[in-house]
Image (cartoon, rainbow, N blue to C red; front, side, top):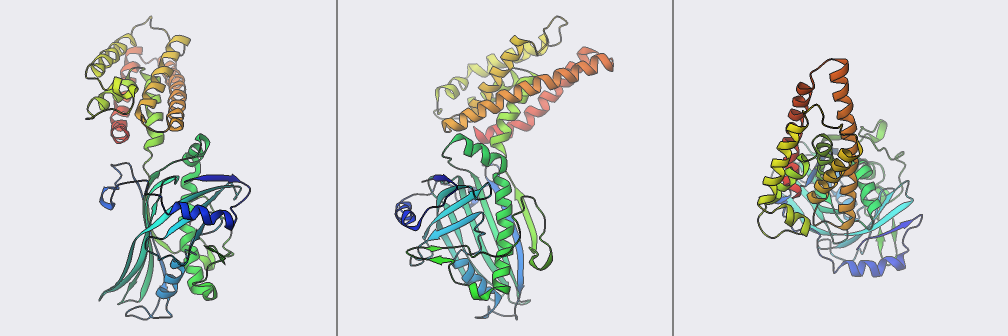
Length: 416
C-alpha cells in the first residue's frame, strides 16, 4: 500500500482501516541480512552515537539504557517533521505493523507506507547488554529493506550507545515524479532523519524523562512524535552544536547509485560513441541465464546480437577518424546517439515499472545530447586551439570510452 496527499494528514478514523489492511501485506523484498550487499544493489547506512554513562554493571532500572528502551518501544525517536509513526500499542512488539507518514517539502507532501517489526533482541551478557528491533518494509513502500535500532551498554565502562544499521534500495512509487524526487532529494531526508534520531533519543532520555514511554497522542491508535525544540531540519551532513550535540561518533554511508548511474553513464557513452552503450548492455544480457523479462532485453540477449553490435562499434571507431565524417552534433548523427542512449538506458532497467523505464529513457537521451556536445567541443578545442592531431584526440576519446565502460560494467551487471 502507498498513498500520498498534499497539505493534509490522515485522520485517525482513516488510519485504523488502513492499518488493518497493512497487516495482511508481505515484505517487499526477499533477501536475508547476508544477501543485502552493495554488489547486490543494496545501499548501506551505519551510525553510532553515545547516549551517556551510567554506573558499571547491568542496566539500572532508572538508568539511561532503560529510559532509552522505553523511547524505542514507543517509536518516539523519530522526528515527526520527517516521519510520524501510527500503530496499535496493544499489538506485541515483534510482528507489529506500523504505518509511516513520510513528510517532505516542509511537510506539505505526505506519503503513507507500512513496515513491520521483524527481529527483536534482548540480551544481558557478562560484558554488555543489548536491546533493539528491526523494521522491514512492506508492499507499496517507497523503499525496500531492513533497519536495525540497537541499544548497547558496556558493563565495564557503563557507556550506553545507540546503533542504527540499515540496508535499503528504492521501492515502489505512486507516480513518476515521486520517484524522480526521491532520486534527487530522498537521501538528504534520510540523512537528516538519521541524525535527528540520535539527537531526539539523547534529548528525551537525558532532559525530558516526563515524556519517556508515553506516545505523543493516543486514541484508538498510538502516534509517535512529541514536539521538541531541536532547531530546523538540516539537509546537509554536520554535527549539531551546543547542548543538543548529536554525538554521532561513527557514521558510514555507502549508497548504491546504480539507478542514476546506469542510464546516465550509458547516455554519456552513446554521446561519445553511439554503438558503445547498446553493445555494453547486450554483452551483459547475453550472459544472463534464463528467460528474459521483456521483448527488448530478450532481443538484445540473443547470442548473435552483441557480435553484430560489437562489429558496428568497431566500424564506428574507424569511421570516426576519417576526415569527411560529419560532426556528431549534426541532426542525423545526434539523432542516432539519442536513440542508442535511450535504447541502452531502457534496456538496463528492463522489467521495472513503466515509470522507471520512462525516466531511465529520459536520462539516457538527455545524457547522450549533453555528452555529444561536450566532447565535440573538447575535441574542437584540442584540435584547433592546441593543434592536437585529430587522430590523436580521437584515440584519447576512445581510451576514455573504454575507461567509462569498464567502470560502468559492474553497475550494468548489478541492474541486469
